[in-house]
Length: 283
Ligand SMILES: Nc1ncnc2c1ncn2[C@@H]1O[C@H](COP(=O)(O)OP(=O)(O)O)[C@@H](O)[C@H]1O
Ligand SMILES: [Mg+2]
Image (cartoon, rainbow, N blue to C red):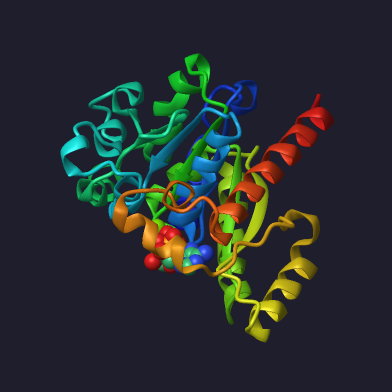
């Protein structure tokens, strides 16, 4: 949890985030193992499959999104670390994946040093936002997805400061809602000082097990609490989803027909439709 004082001190960045074509979504939840990376990879793949141009930013030093998309260590020449340190422009770090329309800025373990290295700098929370400015302005990406570490640390704050909205994967298990209170508090803090325009894009229920009555109970509690912000699409627990990363493939490529792939495709369509409605309303 970043210190409140630190968040309050920082000055908002210049320039409106809402003017670019790209919708920048931060995939956040400080709990580990709730499906953030899986959602980043497979929602990204599914969005690309329905015609969007997607940039995935791996902002977790574990680099699971990079590995899961087949971008092994050898292909990670320029990483998010170099970008946040100001050593390389973000465009130079963009690597194409095997999927047309899907690109990634990979991460490696160096990224875990960022907190120490930039932690005392004045624009420490704006590093990613500043770095993405050129991509937002000149790039033709329609979606930028940022995969976060399981923590509300400086990397997550940077991602929230750079984003238009937060997408929350929520595992259908006991205590799921309790963790959300802390996440929402961080979103409020970021909104109050670093990024007033930050919205909640939506909540997606993951690893849903229909044989388990707890899954159903959690799903209905979450819907009661978040209303329409919860996507109709629910991602089922599906073994094919968990097998795919070890082949360096999104599940949509590994097994398009399985329930997990179909759910992520459905989610992508829902995201696109809702996004169109939001834009129409805002226009
Ligand atoms: N729908 C699913 N069905 C089965 N396993 C899943 C599903 N979603 C995620 N997993 C598995 O659960 C584990 C945690 O998911 P991951 O996306 O890495 O979470 P996070 O990024 O939030 O830590 C991984 O092993 C992943 O393969
Ligand atoms: Mg992860």
